[in-house]
Length: 124
Image (cartoon, rainbow, N blue to C red):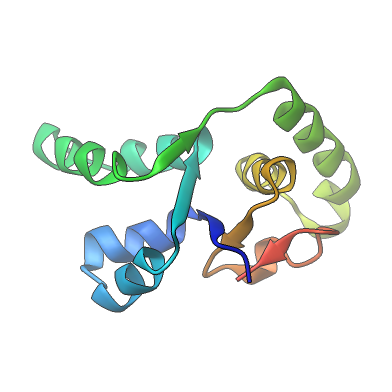
C-alpha cells in the first residue's frame, strides 16, 4: 500500500464534525496526506460561521493542498466524458479522481461506489 493518500471530503466531515478519533488515527498513520482544491472548497463551504470556518482552516492546514492544474482539469474532462452518463460521475468527484491519477495517490473515501468504476484509480 502507498504512503501517499488523498483523503476525500466525507472522511474529513466524519472526523471534524463527529469527532471520529478512529478515522483520524487511520489518516494520521499515512506519512503523506493530501487534499485538493475541490475538497478544500467542499469542506469550508459547509461551515456556517466564522469560528467554525477558522477551526476548519486550522485543521486543514496540517495537510498538503494540491491545486488544480491544467493536467488535472484535462483528465477530469476525460473522466466526465467517459463516466458521467454511464455511472453518474459528478464534477467534484471527477476532479478528486483526476488529482489522484495525476499524482499517483490512493484515495481514502467512505463512498467507494462514487469512484470504483474509474480505471486505474486506487481506493482505500
